[in-house]
Length: 311
Image (cartoon, rainbow, N blue to C red):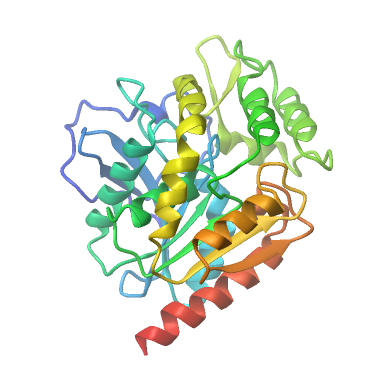
């Protein structure tokens, strides 16, 4: 599918989306562009027929929409219309002009994308940052949804896991000298020490500066707000979890150091009707660590609650 579209009024012909600057050759162009209330560009891809039940995929902090490519294709093959988009400050989407990477800002952007799609209430699948956004949007009554899948995200996450992610994202502010150096950083972050299968696959997640060095494809200012969010998120997301009244599934990576079984138990007490699945072979980045098991669990859940309810 290759149809770059502006689903809301464009900003003007001289406006170049900030996130596209420094993109490496061969990086896939976004299939869609949407605009936020602040007139920021939001980049997205889609799979399947727009007339099919809508599923919206939201990536984790520091990731891009490309993390969902395989999942998007699988769900489209099962009869869903699937949309994944780059959160503000990530991938091809614009960087927030005032450095606003608050929970409210991400919720506003999600609402804008869903409104632009113009269909019925979507199923939302969010990993980490994306899961926080979906949980807040639904639990606070700011968006209606047909179902919710939270991927390794609960209100009470561990400090150790948070610090490890922050350390990974903050390394090499001066940039990497080569793709090999980027691959080394990824392998050191992964619990199993695996290197990326292909250096070409890294190119969708990095950009190149005017100095020739490689940088992660996110706005460095995004990290500045994370400490504040961690301090406030537990109370806010706990309250949101109590107000969930839709089919909900929580997926945890068995070796995750971000979400513990204690955190899961607390969430299930707040949202007793939620289904819980522990994918033992996966870590925090469940979608990439074990796509097969995760994909099967997710499609079974959606087929039960979305497809069956539409018949």
